[in-house]
Length: 466
Image (cartoon, rainbow, N blue to C red; front, side, top):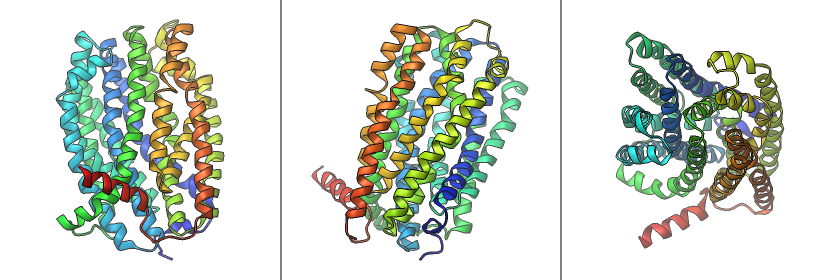
């Protein structure tokens, strides 16, 4: 057994808790900075600035999802290779994933940059608010390839079971952002420009530190070459393509919700933006679940231990339920403090939206957690397109009709209500699909070691036909 494959023994619940909490602390550091950005912007007393951040956030979510898809592919391949005891393969797959992530991230950023005005108007922004959102995005988008290096680098660290260093890297990046925010936003009076520049500095910090940690503690990287990149193209994108499509579903759904909320004015969009910044801070542990559970499933799948794969899935759902209840209780108790923190007017629509989220709606985040855990199972058990189907279903059929109905019945609060309840059905579908593929994997005799072989063959066939 490879010493780096640390999840092949020991308590599964402990592995899940440690990986999720340490990963979430790193995520929380970054999300907390976005949260603090919103506090600072709110202090400026300009509703159009807060609304602009809300519109820009929907597009940033879209671009960040591309990086998360690449990270999922890299993490799954590295974890499986480690579980099989092939550290050299893990190193080469990590190197190729980083190179492809940076290159395709640059192309993706350019495509979004040249279409910013159209994308912002598509979300429902207009006038000064639209101009501010475009300005903010023009500054921050060129750093997307660097962000991808940091995201994929963190996935490599977690695939090795090194959640602590992954966490430390994210925390240090968050600290850089947090220190620069007040200096640039208030000290130099740069407002949105200052917030964007602080975020860029944090991205470079995270990328640099994550690559340094891999080099120093996990065998570094393979020697890049055209031959190695060509050999790894199909394995990487056999997972990355459906994973990217999966991740893009969320910002598409969020974009529709943003446009629906825009019908109720800038204060409603600002309230939704506050909820959008608050959610990942409050539920950082849930957000971290897919990336945390994936390496545990991947290593045990690589070692052909179906019992521990199923046990990981079960314990992850128990962990999700406990975290959701605890966080929802804390949010409910802190509603008054949130209203004071964001200077929300008594009886205002922004206040009602924040109170709604910090009340009953937060409990429904359990079902998002179910989707995250199921996606981890799909991506690490050779069925990444199941993630694509369930995520797109959740953010189209599970978002648009419920939001339309909720808005018709309850107005702006109904938009959030419809969005929250839409996830219940698709969480159930994802749960039963995951149970089925785990049962199939348990009954399947061992095959050659190359992971995701069926997806690789399909991807190669499509590639050659082009």
